[in-house]
Structures are given as C-alpha cells and as structure tokens.
Image 1 (cartoon, one colour):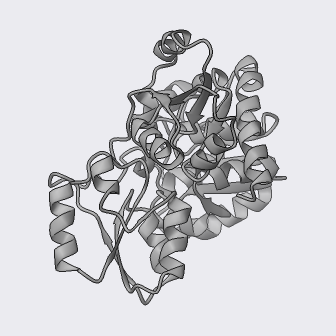
Image 2 (cartoon, helix red, strand yellow):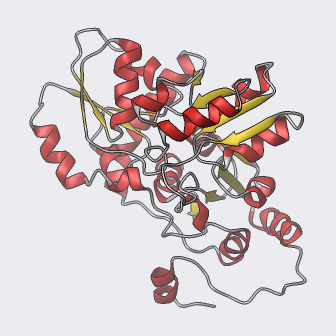
Image 3 (cartoon, helix red, strand yellow):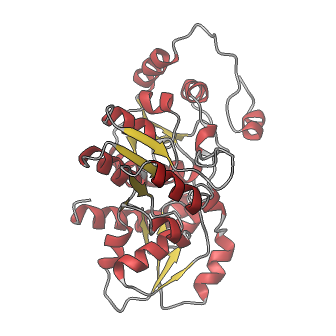
Length: 330
C-alpha cells in the first residue's frame, strides 16, 4: 500500500495489478462490497464509461451526486466535479482515481483574483459555470452548466446585473442567446479553444452531408459555423434524433464513444484542432484509467475533501441551480 505522501505526490494509488484480473468484474465486486457508485463524465475513456453506473455531463452528474444512496462515490472525471459531489453529499466518501486530474478552465480563474474582480461590481449577481473550484462556487449566487446557463440567465429579472465566469466563450454565447449585458471573466477551456476554423471548413467541404455540431465553450468563430450548439448531453441527443448519417463533432472526443453506442449506423468525425496534436482529448480527463479506478475503489483513495465552511457556502448556489433546473424540467 502506498503511503499518503506517495499518493499525494503521484495523485493516484500505484500498485501492482495481476494482469490476469478481469478489472470489469473486480470493480463490480468492489462496488457491491463497499456500496459504491461510479459516476463518469462523457469525456472519460471508453472502458471507464462502460463500467460506470451513470454517465453524463456536469448537470446530470450533479443531479446524480445529490440523490445517490451509495455510501461511496467514485467520480471518474476531474477535481472540480468530485468537489461538487462532496458539496452535495458531504457525509459520503468521495473518491477520484487521479487527484491531479484538474481543469484548464478552472485553473484560469484563481479565487483570490476573482474576489478582487467581484469587488469591482458590488451590485452584480454572480453566476459561475460549474467548471470551477469549490472556493469560486462559494463566492457565487448561482452555479450553472452548459445545459442550463441560458435558461438560468433568462429566469432572472431583466434589470439584474450579472457577472459570469469563468468561461468567456460560454458567457458570450449566453449573451447572444439572451440579449443580456453581462460582465465576463476572461477564462477558457484549452480543449474547446483549440478547434481550427480553416480545418473545419475543409472538413465540411469533404463531408458536405455531415452536420457540424459544437459545444458552447468553443470560440464564436467556430459556433457561427455550427448546425447545432449544445451541452455534451445536448450534442448526444441531437445525433440520436437527427436523421443525418454523419456528424462533425467539436467537443472533447470522449463523447464519440456514447454517440457510436447510441447510433452504431452513423459516422462521427472529431473536429480537428489547429495543430497536429490530439488536443481535442482533454489531458486532465484522460489521466483517469480503468486501472487507477480499480485501485482507487479497492483502497478508497485518493479521497476528495472540502472544508466544511466552503461546503456550506458553495452548496447554496449549486442547490439554487438544481432547483431552477427542476422547475424548468431540465
């Protein structure tokens, strides 16, 4: 067994695993033994998605974390997601296969700088995208996801002044959809900012029959080209319901696994980034592996904890989001 210091340094339990072990079977056994549930984001590798009890986007995962009866939540995602689960279920043990699975968007908004930014606009209500730290959520009035950001802003009085952070691209999209004048924090997701307009144009020319679909975290130049813009779940549902047989997908490539499972007769083409790397794979999401998940569940480490005072402050804006979403049927 690794020491706490070793796990903290590496971010995960690093133990020998017998190569003959059927990890899918072993994980199922451990889940029953420990009364554990595995929540996985759409951007996780396909093996993790296949062993998860629930797969979803940030809104769906938050809703599941709030209502699960399991004693242990294994969150196959990134750190801010596991923090959100802990905030909503403070008495449950929340585990993350790799504690160093962070988020470039979350990192782009340090809480101490956002505090100073917020102080410049004392009469503004603060809406933060769920992709941020627990400390940032604790400074917020309402949390949102890409699934409900437009509806949450529309639910507020027209004269309500709003700060929106940390994603400037999602914020700009919400402004365009709602006509509201919001103050935006200058943050962005490295994965969604990397898509190349020129390469996508050429790809669309090669596949004129394909629908081009994009996540609202993409830059405006990319969104202007899209046939459909939506959250990760929205994109998945669009590919299921739309009669088109091929889709060019501008978001993290992990979602394509679920698209292929839901529509095996359709073709899904990941939108190209503006260089030769696989930048439409989130390096943070992909830190989690089936092996790390197995060892995490077996050892119940690494555990994600959030200070009680942060939990109390951050819970209110998240619950406000869940209440608004429930009232709107989202």
